[in-house]
Image (cartoon, rainbow, N blue to C red; front, side, top):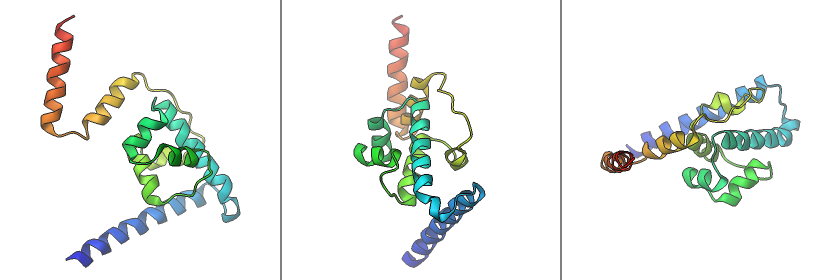
Length: 143
């Protein structure tokens, strides 16, 4: 049974790598331009983080990465694995297509606090969510 789980994991990992490779090729980025691509990708990740109004500390905590490591990735100074990229993408809550669409303009969130709160709530248990909801109700009824 353990071998099947490992094989499925490796299959998905290979699929992700293939998907990213196709995106890289479709953008016309060759192997000799990978350093530039790494910087472009890091800049893109930073721009999305800023548009979503996350500090580097908030995003690194959410992605379970060290803030210095994330900073190096954003500056294009650090190689990183597909697993690390996946953690960042999931923490940002955006599809991979948006990460690799370097021409797409980014607009700041209309209300970043609601977006951040929803993002944190999605990681909590139902009981924790109920507690937060009741707390918000109490605060809003005092107005």
